[in-house]
Image (cartoon, rainbow, N blue to C red; front, top):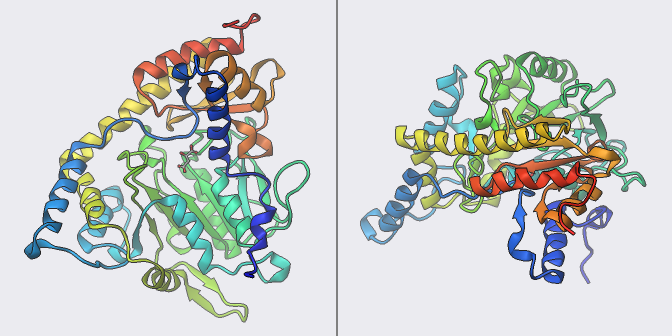
Length: 424
Ligand code: MLT
């Protein structure tokens, strides 16, 4: 009988978003008359059609695969050069950031990359030769769960969280942007614009993180999946806008939220050649070398039609269409944010991020607010407690929906502050 990876058994519950889907499904099943009324502003899944430039590129790619002369088989595991070059030009050089195309690793998204990247780092708790991991709290649960699965933590703690992880409190007091840790940490996961709070780190704040990482020989795993939502040009969209980050940080990027690729799948990770780790005996090793090796062994890369679609996003028309998509969702975010503000709810995010973060009124817990909105108004939000202990007492509303649904969602939020339930 095979031995299992028993670190999986430490996971406190099912993965958060399927758990929400399960609860919503159970409600729909037990209330069939109300099921059609459900509006989902929980998981951050896009709703609008793909940019036409990407669609046309996938059609063209399918035609190429249909003919011997233009047929494509295996490509380079880390992505075709024409795609990586387009990314370097469009996302980095255009913003004054130097980068080589071979520092871009195409993938099927930042969630799988955030998971796979742990494969090239030592696993185990720090007392067993592993790394001490820091995350913000609240946090996108993927960073934590993957570290649990790799054996980098101790057991689940009674009040939430896992032994051995350094949790950095993100609260209204610090604007949901924690400062670097004061205790020893080897790897820190950061996400800005932030999921779930919608906060954005300023250049100065990221500068302090980079300084900390360089001084402590630490690695920053920076998730920039929502960078397209930054409206203020003074705010950084990449950690590589901070000098020195190319020696201490890697960055996850996604086409899910800007190009609407949640179903198509596409993203990339930037691993600069100057970023190093060390062996147990103290030898310094470029992470780029290990990550390249990992890709060539474990993957044959992203499919040809998807790579063609990604390249199309960087054409002038692709850029314009993507910007329109992001503007549309930001219009939704503004409506949701305003609806919360009008109700007198304490509200954050939604101005440089597609998520609005709201304090539950009347002392409600975040699952209570979730239940109230689901059962009374058939509105699905994400309870903050699922993102960590500091998420308790908050909930997240996703702006990824149709305009009609978002306007209706804004009206339905009123049940939170109504003294009488909005629906009997
Ligand atoms: C979220 O709702 O937090 C995200 O959509 C999840 C994801 O991107 O994997």
